[in-house]
Length: 103
Length: 103
DNA sequence: GGGGATGGTCATAAATTTCTGACTTATTGC
DNA sequence: GCAATAAGTCAGAAATTTATGACCATCCCC
Image (cartoon, rainbow over all chains, first blue to last red; front, side, top):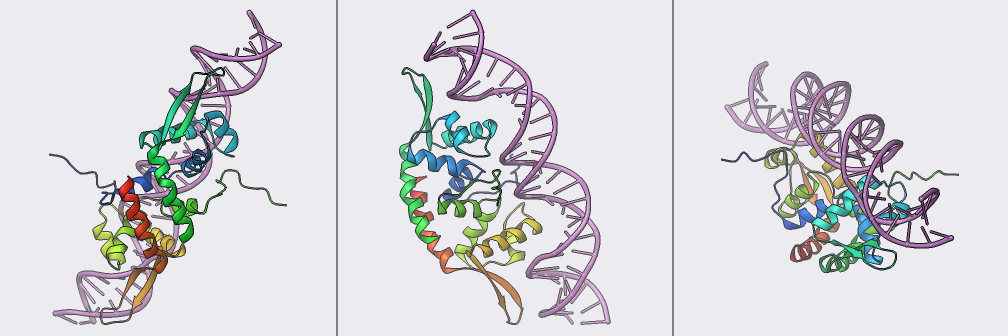
């Protein structure tokens, strides 16, 4: 027998999960930047004014987990890591653009 | 001269404001319920398991402020208050439905 | 081989959000 | 008139999120 955790909202609607996944101080901004071009950890830290490693690292991890970003190791000369928007991430773009028309 | 508050994200994209407005533990669920039918404070408190007056009250106030809900005093026999979805609120519904297809 | 950049992690601290319980005013049914 | 319901507010506590600063392993350039 399971005791439901009533302190957590029960999600009836799938869009609520996404809303929750994109909530957080920097996630929307990270997502927006990722739409423009692949992003890198250290650049983000410089681009997003007022942010910090810890939170960015966690945010990237979460955006990865929900399948909006994917971590790509670039095995080129200056070996580095990039985060790319996934297909799912790209599919959200037109929806957000629509939103902008409404807001 | 103004010193920008760097601790706060600078919003480049209008959709980010909406995202932020709809973030919070119970706001998405309140919105969803309001889409179904007008909502009342005390019913919400019973419907949304684990919620509390304080937070619901604040959430309703905020959803009102951003123009998604409007407070309506029903001057009928059992005089009471209802929160109705505004036109803007209704216009978000198809967007969220689209989102459900993606998620 | 030394110094800097990249991409992190960890423990702790500070800030923000949410929750609890007491209290309030007005209305309504009996 | 009296108790219950509705719709809150308020102060303080608890929980959750963010931020800080220290630290670490690679890699890359000179």
